[in-house]
Image (cartoon, rainbow, N blue to C red):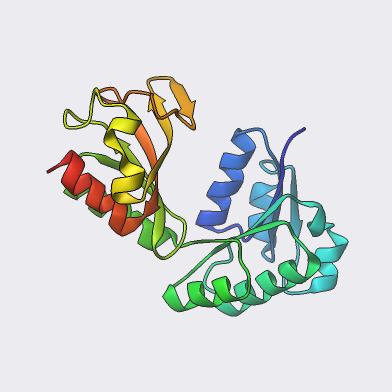
Length: 220
């Protein structure tokens, strides 16, 4: 059964999410107050609807509660973003991801119960900075203000060692939750699994701890 998503706000960010979800075979309802944007996505999304997301009765009429995940990608109207998120929580939507415009907006979204908050401009800046500073950090996904998932490319310093040899959970308080090896992905690797040169490790933990591991174990 295909996963069902609703995306509210069809600007550059929301539009890119709609396109990517559709390319991955998901069912997507695309919602915006602009008829021009809705017309643009009429042939792309499963459904494209003109609607005011700050009107609870409108969202109820769309059956928004039945969607597994709703993404609020409203542009610069912070008030509409916050009100939409509150309504979605009250309706009982299972998972809500919201785009934040700034740090204050992000704090408010977290307080009112957004499950995931994304900050595209800031996150992109962090990705670029990490890539510039270290050849080992390939990508970065912020989970909260202090925790992230990072893609780290295994170098000579750790290649050939097993996960238990590295003992990163005890030494650094972080975990390797996956390993990309060519076209293969090892999910929840075993402690005995060895890290090979060029492996891409998916590491989760506090930013300071991941950075400490990169500096001491990989670049030390």
